[in-house]
Length: 261
Ligand SMILES: [Zn+2]
Image (spheres, rainbow, N blue to C red):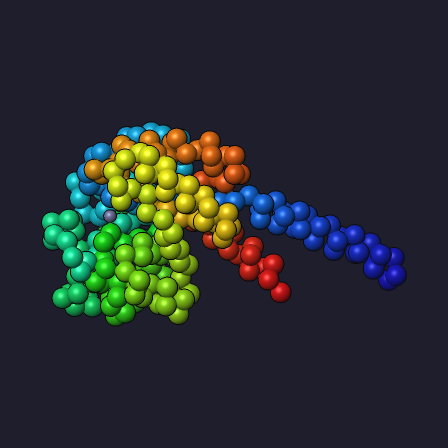
């Protein structure tokens, strides 16, 4: 009996020791995600991103001529895909919204149906983020339906934070759906030097929080956006920040939670 207990001790110690080393390694490696919005729509930088070697996450608009093709192209080349769900904004033209958007005048059944169909029109997607939506994301009833569908599909929610009053964090927490939020917009101004400046902000946020998330766009600003990101990679390497698919940031959060007593 005594002999058995002695044998057991090293067995218990070894995995614990390995875990400690693993945790240490993971917390040292800073991670940032770059979400590129509006695939499926404008051409701009589609090829620059999808044939490039920076592991961006491709947010693809549903129901467009290129939704399926862009999602398949991204997946084939190893990029993570999410559904870029169009949602009603407070300002802006209706035409910017794209087909079948989530608007506040829809019935709950129509919203549920549109979200499900949007997911079906973007193959390989593993998450949902919002395109525009400053009005609709403030409506808890609408947000709840989207998060419920995400839960059914095992999707994560990526809140683009187009309104400070967004209900995504509250509802996602309530329903236990994984949520990420944007820290930095990369291309509000269409110049690669501006994108580089914003990438530096992303690096600083990542160093401060242990992880960071930026959004860029593939359309009108796509070319300068991809150039600005590309030219920032040396700086990210120097700072030991790795660009990862958005879903890889959840592991980091889990490790942090484990470390907190
Ligand atoms: Zn968008």
